[in-house]
Image (cartoon, rainbow, N blue to C red):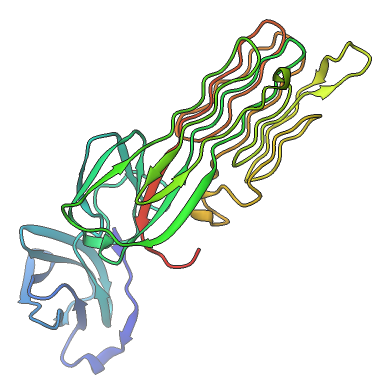
Amino acid sequence: MSIAVPLYGFGASGGGAGGTLTVTAPANVTVSVSKDGKTKTKNSGTSGVVVFKGLKSGTWTVTITGDGKTAQKNVVVTTDYSTAISFSTIPEFTYTGNYKIVNDSDEPITVSQDNWKIRFLTSGTLTFTNLNGAEGGIDVFLVGGGAGGNYSYRGGAGGGSGYTSTTQAVTVQVGVKYDIAIGAGGAGAKTSGGRAGGVTSAFGSIANGGATLSGNGVYGGDGGSGGGSGTLNQDKDGAYSKAGVGGTDGANGQGTHPGTGQGTTTREFGEPNGTLYATGGEGAAANNIIPDPVPQNTGDGGNGAGGSIESTPGGSGIAIIRNARGAA
């Protein structure tokens, strides 16, 4: 990647022909700049600041090495510039379950000098071996498992989604074993109510699973977002003639007997542009339409079913950590 770094000065003010590049790096590492087969190398010393003078205009590769680690970035030099470089900010760890490491655009990464997120998809034990960018703490976002959808021949209601929680600036340590439990999605049903979702827990915080309310299967479950209910048609022996959508982003479901949501956002880390989790399940009408399956690791409530169709299970929960960012 090529990065145009902030302007530091102009022209001859850098001293001598060519540009001057000021690099801020970790203390006591080897810093080199290279271009067109030519390399200049210095040690960052205790200050971590290294100055390279007389650099020709163009793209220079900045490399740091130390303690068996290496990091690189490209810098476009035209006059005098400054840049900062560090080793990967992603913490080093072991985990006994499944996980994904992504950037803020949700793209998979293995190395980063910027922000990072780790998504824990199944239960396991986490042990940090090097904190790197987690030295300043981590933010923790949890989603409980979604409840299974309800069944009723009249039109089953949707399960409540898992609840969500966000905890900021959690201190973590190397060598400590942190147990992470991912709440399972509740089972669907062929008769009456589905099953509640499981609790997700990590780093001393919890997010409860979504609920189901039996009521002959027609009441939407409560949760992070409420389950939807069918719309009652009084002219057809109590049958539900229209499906009711589940709530999103902490809202109640829709329909005649909807479930109640938590009333606060269910987006990742509680931020307006965060990935949306925990949508309530959809309520069904009195028909044999097969409900859509619910994705795992969403905390979504399962969809209800009517006629002779089985309702769907809820989505499992998820635990996500990131480098601490301050107030959401």
